[in-house]
Length: 200
Image 1: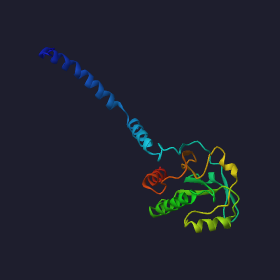
Image 2: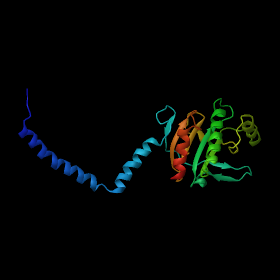
Image 3: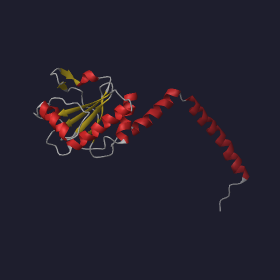
């Protein structure tokens, strides 16, 4: 049996104190900004909903889409910079799209109830449906709060394998998140994501 006698304990105690002092010196030398950076990195890891699900798509798309409002005036989504912009690609023949749009309708209601006004939800209907047909489609699927925009050409689907698809752009216009398929967009996880982005 190996025995650590009193002399060995004293020897290890003496060598431990300089190490403890060194660690305390390093910790105290960390600036507040470095600690804040570490804290923010921790938050960012939690900031992306459904990140480990198969439909998750990292950011990287550009905010180049152009639209026309109900008066026929053209505008670009990049003009919405300064708001959090949620872009949903959908079609009237997609079987899962009505469910997804209703979830976004619920999200719009929840954001409004919470006083969050700087989130813009934009549905891009891919195809050749008329605006009147889209209004009927929204009404028949009980979609009440989402704005109706004229249909957009299939070219907006470049690099996207299917609908529904959702992309989130932060206030600077950077695409930071995407998802292909249906998800719980009116649940707490996605709502908290929108709230954090809106308050940045």
